[in-house]
Amino acid sequence: MAMKSKVLIVGGTGYLGKRLVKASLAQGHETYVLHREEIGVDIEKVQMLLSFKQQGAHLVIGSFNDHQSLVKVVKLVDVVICAISGVHIRSHQILLQLKLVDAIKEVGNVKRFLPSEFGTDPARMENAMEPGRVTFEDKMVVRRAIEEAGIPFTYISANCFAGYFLGGLCQPGFILPSREQVRLLGDGNQKAIYVDEDDIATYSIKTIDDPRTLNKTVYIRPPQNILSQREVVQIWEKLIGKELLKSSISEQEFLAIMKDQDYAEQVGLTHYYHVCYEGCLANFEIGDGAEEASKLYPEVKYTTVEEYMTRYL
Ligand code: NDP
Image (cartoon, rainbow, N blue to C red; front, side, top):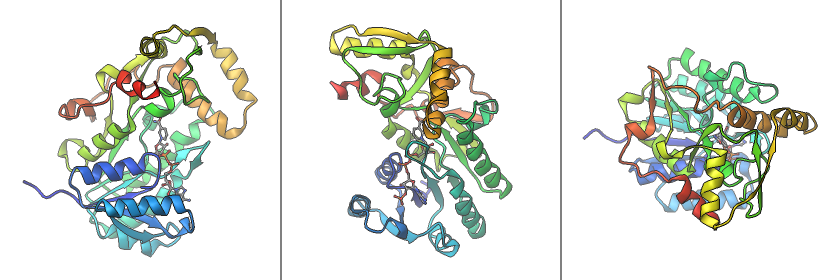
């Protein structure tokens, strides 16, 4: 059997990144995690890094401000996965990855790079609304740099992180499901796709040594998790044994409210708009030159929406 690739995770202390570290170790990869000098006395992050080390990961020091330090760590591995932040209400550092691309280009031995994507496919969002389109534009800038440098890649389109979307019954600004009421976005009938973040990590790691995913986009579409907001609400209602009081927010109202929010909120709201009013995640077929993760890896027992939501009971 072919040797498993050595993997470097950048952004390993993040919401998704820590799951990528766990999945990489679980799938038997020698795993390196970038320890940025700048995290200084952030005790939680240092403790997290130490726990990765206890689980068998190697911590490697480097900084985005020091090209040679990135070159040094990239040299150690075959595969680089970046999960740097890209959510404006938290932090958005997508373009910093250009420095990582420079390091990977210089080293020249990386067999696969997975940039920080893990959401809506930015290549499909040319007509996205302001100001949220910045997320897709920045991710496309990184893609172009990767492709111009001739770096082998896989782009993971992970659709909706379950924690954000299921936790809040698809309502922006909520991450815990109410037992009383819910506001439907429009008629609540547009389909979206929800994926447990641990499953996103598992599928992502599965792609790295797989020739079928080389230089392709991999969409994660667990078939049972392609549901409308109404269907998500129904699942929750069944779990709590009670119907929620429902109201609805029209497209016009949603857009009008959005205008009064600050920039970071508006970025997030435009993403919800495309997902929940336009159905941008599920309204297309996966064409040639792309793959679907649950078909490639039927052995992964993914978490269904109902299973995920039991954690809120
Ligand atoms: P986080 O906000 O949790 O941050 C991830 C990492 O970014 C951290 O580990 C941090 O590393 C690193 N980072 C932040 N600032 C800097 C900096 N200045 N220099 C270097 N590293 C930095 O990220 P998420 O897990 O929320 O997001 C990861 C990806 O997932 C993004 O592409 C995002 O767009 C996407 N996403 C998709 C969602 C969806 O529903 N589809 C939802 C949420 C995110 P350190 O600890 O070293 O500071």
